[in-house]
Each structure stands twice: as C-alpha cells, then as structure tokens.
Image (cartoon, rainbow over all chains, first blue to last red; front, side, top):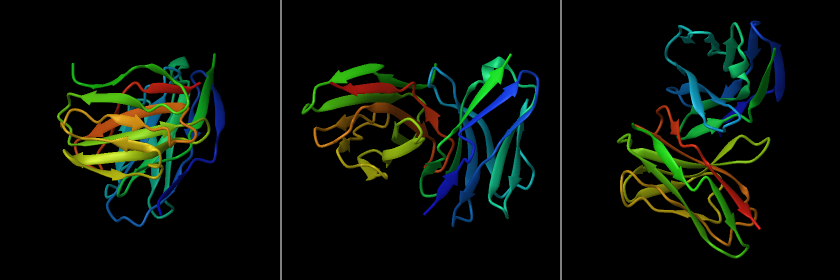
Length: 111
Length: 112
C-alpha cells in the first residue's frame, strides 16, 4: 500500500524567512508524480508545485521549491521569503493507482 | 471561466436522511473524485470515476454512493448508513487518473 507521511503537524516561520516542510512517501510504482497542495483558511485546495518522479531536476515555482530525493523517497517543500499569505495547511501527495495525501502541516507565518 | 463548482457550501441533515452533494466541472476532465476531510486526517478518497458510467470505490466508500451519467457531473449521496457523516467534502477532477487534480470549494455537511 502507498503511504505519504508528513511528520510535522505544525510549523511557524517569521515573515521573510525560509521554511522547509518535510514529506516522505512509499510507493511500488515506477512512474509516479508528487505534489504539494496548499489549503488556506478558505479551505480551497491550491496546487503549489508538481514533480515528475522520472525527472532528476527539482521543481521550482517562484518562491517555492522542492528537494526530491528519489532513493530516500523524500519530497520536501522549501518556501523562501515567507509571506503572511503563505499561512495555510500544506498537503503532500503522491500518485499511484490513486492519489494519496499526507495528513498535512499547518504553517503559520508570523509578522 | 473554467473550474469546479460544488453546492451547497453548507448542508445540514437530520439523522436517517440521505443527502446529495453536487459537483460540476467544465474543464473537460475525464476523471473525477470525492474526498472527505476530517481534522488531523488529511484527505481520504471516497469514490473516483475515470469515465462516464464507471466509478470505483476508494478507501472509505461505505455509506456513500455516486453516479457518473455525464462527463461534467459527479454527485455524491451520503446515505443514512454512513455512521459519522459530519465532515468537509471536496470534489476534484483531472485530465487523467494520475494527473494533477483541481479542486472545488468544498461542502461542509453537518448532521443534526
């Protein structure tokens, strides 16, 4: 069975600082995708970043980047220059025969 | 504008009643999904559908039913057999089964 583990239930970061959210996964699939989703207080799920497992290069989207370690099955999200609008729940997800989500990390950006 | 709509935003139900949550998408996506979100448990898959007139159970399908008569629509019925239905329900769609999923705004169901 596939699993996605986010070991940090809550984190906080000072505005303008950098924070890294951890995610590990377990899959038997050879071709899979990894995602980070953001869920702000409005509860709308928003895609932050996507990584194809067959690509070695780490994905980057503006202030968001990932550290993808395929052998270690690790997929962490780095947020640079944190902004107040980054306050949200962040979910890591992995595809297999379906989508598998982690339990989320609640991030608070402190002014 | 393309997107996914869910209605209603808030829904109240008496115990023993069935209730149907609506999900519509105009993204021309083939695959659609229903998730349940409870505090501290992330998203759990209820049902998913890859094509019209076909759907599969997810991890927590008991007490729920779905239909997929049109590509654009994937309604979820919460039946009286669902023992603890109070939760936040999210609908999503994707171009293919393993593709990036786009989410609707969600429906908060409360059983009174």
